[in-house]
Length: 452
Image (cartoon, rainbow, N blue to C red; front, side):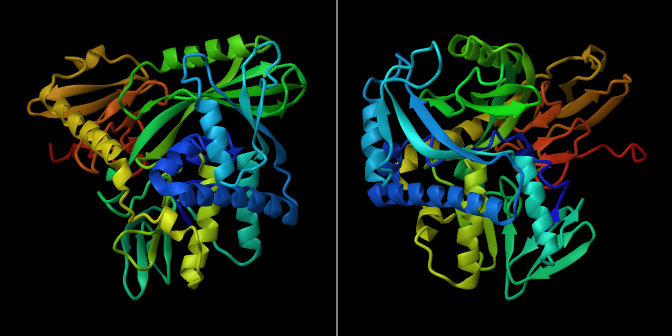
């Protein structure tokens, strides 16, 4: 296994680790896009993923706080009144016969009204789990190379990966990098990158019912509980927006806290906060399988906030594909699929990406570098080009090209994460221009001082 950084140092470290077959794109919507059988296979595969994680935890004796618990889906008054009933019927058609309508979710004094109870969902500590998986791989003779950047991928009779330390040949390559870094266009026109925000608020142990909670708006909210030393942490997420297309992170964190206090009035101060990146496919299902046009290169992407279960589905499905075994999920998750029923969403997302190129015609965010505060970045126009300029905590300026090396969009400064984010396809870079997230696989161009 080749890892650009430390194990789980990317988006895995930012997941809230809901393990669910209660999918946030709703089963009645999956039926519309993929048919009743497709919705059934989606439910089946996510259920199988939770079961597989549970079996691995038991088999490897992993101490990662894994536990089964109920999940509750509720709808606020402003949502269509029939959404709960529609989802109940669709979930039953998808084979989730134990899902039931209850009069309210167990959220203390807050009355959710009628909602759905999804039994046998799960949660765990993702970093403890992944660390144990890595140890199990090495114990069985597998090799993990950290700090190894994969630069080029080649398909063929013998696949290979060119890395920062040499070339690796293999019978099969799996690109599991949140969004693929092995191609420039194909998959990236069929999914979009979103930032999602999370806070952790302190509550007294036992004050909140241990369960998973979700509401139905877009963007929706998601809630779970994590035990800490002497108290619990209520983990609440939501307030999503397209990556690089909003500059109000502080307001979004505040809205999350306000939303939480209304529904969980016993919640105390915010002790943690972070954001993560989720890839949203235009037809609501992940892309897992052979990379379009390849025989030996496979991808796992489009997790839509369900990375822990999708990653496990990927492990099951791609193993079958490599070994030539039949798997009923293959067609459903095929990265080459064209979903005609999602044409409107496909057009909307790609028009949105194209619209970002208008930034080439605008001025800079500031006129002079002296206007950039310590610890912040800004885009400055320099003749016909734009520069991404960061002032570090010591006051030193660091300049990069503002052009994303993926497809040429102009990046934006993310003051919360201290990153440069591409609003077209979600590539992200640290303050100095080093690549953090694909689809870009190289950093922002840095001017050659000696040549200048």
